[in-house]
Length: 282
Image (spheres, rainbow, N blue to C red):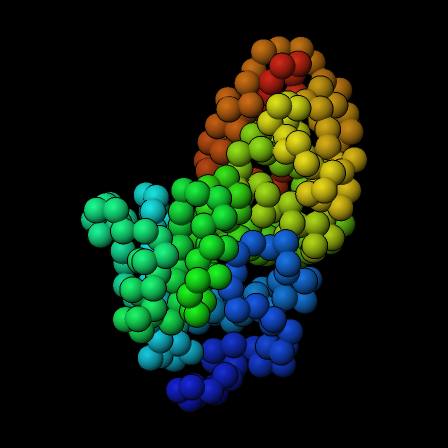
């Protein structure tokens, strides 16, 4: 087993052969990621997954670095995930709750960022209720910005996790069919997933009422024809004929999640679409 050396990239920290493929200072969305860069993230995640099975779940990769979690919205999973990831990499962490900081007294986003930079923060993990806020941050401070969700725009870390999960279960992403159902227009995760999945070669199908699809969809993805109506979902994707009922998208997604949570190892789920909404059959 290779003994990790502080400050040196080795097999106990990151896979070194492909590290030169990385060309990002910030992670704002997946629209500018290449397939090789996403594959590099998967390689690192594979290495960390093994490390997290050990009794001591730490490597010295970010020893001496300080990561600040700056969240303008409530969060449990995302914020905790980033904090634990930083600790696993031996970084120091600072958590700022906007409601309990000077932000609540009127301090601007730029002033807060500049203060954190002046105090020696090396990277900021940022969630903000305004779309585009991380891009503004990246232009005004000289430290790394990681977007943990900005308004209805993007959520790159969640998309990378979705891609990694698909790869872990199906062993590939290229060529698979992925259907994203619901309110695409207001979903930051859906937008980032469209970019990431398309980059990795998946066939992405969007299923939503026209009013819940982005108006600029044809500029948003490489294959604007890959959209589908609710009535055509099974016929065009799974090969089943649609029936008629009045189920809603929310009810469909809720039942789908409940079934998956109760049966996480089940190999297949059968979906049927009904008129104005959806019905789930397990």
